[in-house]
Image 1 (tube, rainbow, N blue to C red):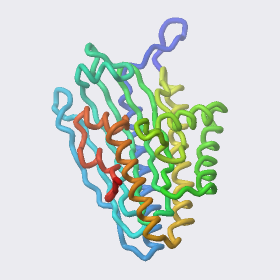
Image 2 (cartoon, rainbow, N blue to C red; image 1 turned 90 degrees about the vertical axis):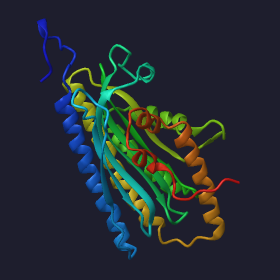
Image 3 (cartoon, one colour; image 1 turned 135 degrees about the horizontal axis):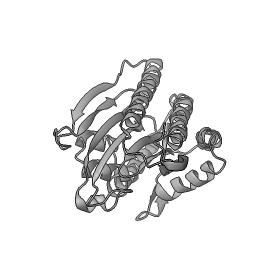
Image 4 (cartoon, one colour; image 1 turned 30 degrees about the vertical axis):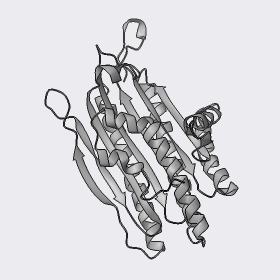
Length: 298
């Protein structure tokens, strides 16, 4: 229950540790479900590819020196040329410069905790869309959820785009009638490559700073974040199955490799998650698992 002040007004929460643990448990269970679904697709394609899990520990942290860590899950198969599914839970203090850029943090209050799941899949067949999904819970002097998912097809199909958006529209509608319009527009703006003047894909949803002023707000935002994960799990494997058997040409592959170059540019120059990981001493291989295994620039 939330802490209470006089006259029943809720006080700001000062210890989110049990809620960080609950979010972490969910992200880990979602990882298990996603990795199982992706391995099943590899079996259907006649491949025995499976995820390899690599634990890592963050050295910087509190007085104990324990800054948390995570597990990088990586698979390279017949359908999924390279897919990473990472869960990390870290804590410590931001550098003074970086603290000034983070919600609720400052030079005087640089402490943070963060837990989340991050997924990027690069596909072997150019007709199968690549995809990104991430959800997270962070605390500073504030606490909030963020995340989203976006579809990145080298060769777009209107049916796939419509189904992907429909899954997230339905998830949003269960929580707030304004969410889908707000978060899909935010995705359009966020997943845009300014120096190229193009979007990196066909969109999805992006949200941040779903603030948790008290426990009821946390429960609402956590439920929404779970639904975002379930929506991804319900739609993306079906899109993969729809396209993975299609024949492709050298021209299709060339188009995919050039598009992957654009994807790499975005993630290295603009992506908030990449910057956060690098600024907080995260595992470099896990942070950069979003980069494609092969790309070209003309």
